[in-house]
View 1 (tube, rainbow over the protein chains, first blue to last red):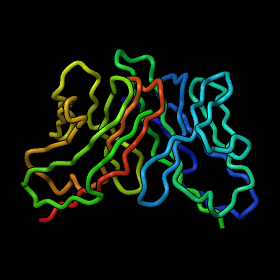
View 2 (view 1 turned 90 degrees about the vertical axis):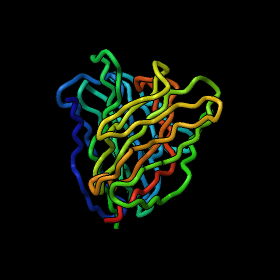
View 3 (view 1 turned 60 degrees about the vertical axis):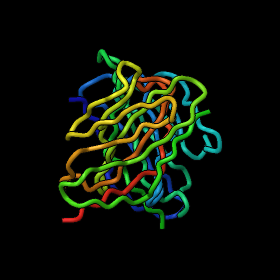
Length: 117
Length: 115
């Protein structure tokens, strides 16, 4: 089956530092990947849509300069949280769209838990 | 614009009993609807999805959901609950069936299974 991985699974950083989260599609090519964030006991909120080789599309209210997204290859998208602050602490989940299947489907990664001290 | 409302943040049923998780949607275009399950500290796993092919959709682990346009609902059911079904369940809506667009999620329903 289609597998999406995220690295790291957990990260703790100091306030003001930057953190990079990787999202990889392991056995399929993903022209489109999505980044979500989930606060404790809340739903997932779409942050941005990442398209391979082009600029990401951000949802309203998401700061593009704070959440840098790069989708340099068909199997890798990265989310960099720049100058992280405690309010950025959250569970970040990516998903990847498998266009190679007859029924296109989004597959979700296991998530990255970010704690900013 | 589209939105999803899940009634009941927590649902508790006895093992072996019927599971019913409610989901109502709002969409300006014919929707594609999904149910996902999330186990603690894990990502989301697709249970089933509605893409207009059939109103009754069967998914994994014995779950099914019925699309009712007149009620704008897509409730998730399972005839007999199992302890392993305890998890967080999310209903989601999208403009596209294959994930060309990001998903809009409901707030989730925490399913508790009583022994």
